[in-house]
Amino acid sequence: QVRLVESGGGLVQPGGSLRLSCAVSGITLVHYSIAWFREAPGKEREGVSCIRKADGATLYADSVKGRFTISRDNAKNTVYLQMNSLKPEDTAVYYCAADAVYGKLLAARGDYWGQGTQVTVSS
Image (spheres, rainbow, N blue to C red):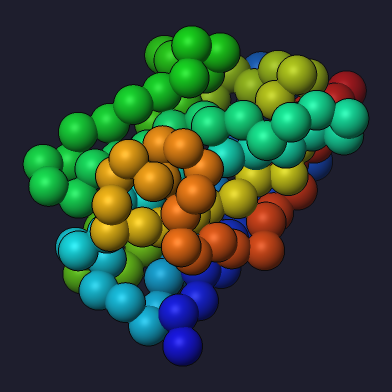
């Protein structure tokens, strides 16, 4: 059974930092590309960042570029999202997703999804 479990969310003040983790089981991470998405109340799900299985290449949404960093630890089967300089508009539920086909992942049609972790940025 494939499971993706996000953790690390919480309440943080503007300008603060959080590191989200996506622990993957049931598949071997090295064979999958991983992405982070987020969904804020009343808004559509938005792609935040992804990391490609083939070469580790990364992509970021313009809204988080320079503030967020995605990384992966294949030995631990875990993907991370380091979020710095957080803004109130970063408030959302953050999901990780996995797929062996990079294009499907970019289209938010990944085969495997986590349950999400809430990030709230507020003073």
